[in-house]
Image (cartoon, rainbow, N blue to C red; front, side):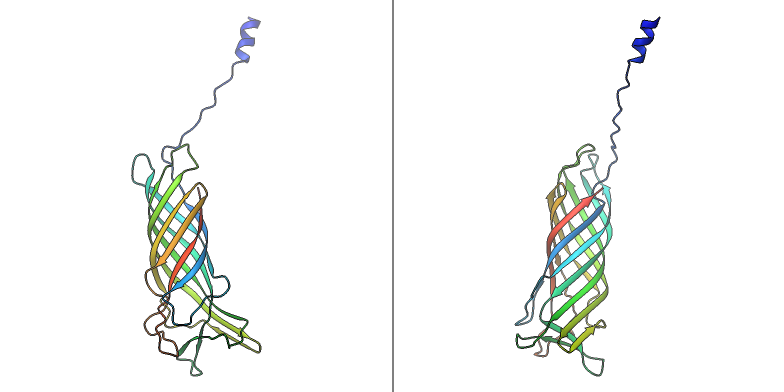
Length: 224
């Protein structure tokens, strides 16, 4: 009787591994990018670092049984900062915006344009994930809609500072193409803006159109 009780006491239960067959992937993200401006006026140049930070949530909606193909729709925030030589200010009447490409003869400490965007990415997602594999290849592509809810142009030189937040020519609605490729946590991300930052009424003092478009080249990290 004692021997039987001893054998019973030594028995151990085998741990049960629960596999989530209805898993979702990559629902939280944040990214860092180098920002480039395209279609610039004559003598326009970026100086110093221009970049952006993005963060948000994407609802992952698998469309096949293996759940390695999905549609993603999300919501996020982005901050873009451009150090460049396009001055944005206004006439003394307060009704006309000035766009002027500054030459090297203009002494300045800072000339910067920045804006904050509410973004909605819409993606087709392909990956090599499984319910038990957490490091996998991914290729995501799609479109991204954005609404610029705050923008600021700032210029500073000794004894003079200009801050401009009322920019009527700003295209607050932005849209572009996105592409992300990578493995595990490290991914390359590209955003190409399809429309311009400013409308057709934005022209420089030399009557050149300010048809700036945004190109982001960066890295993106996904979680959960």
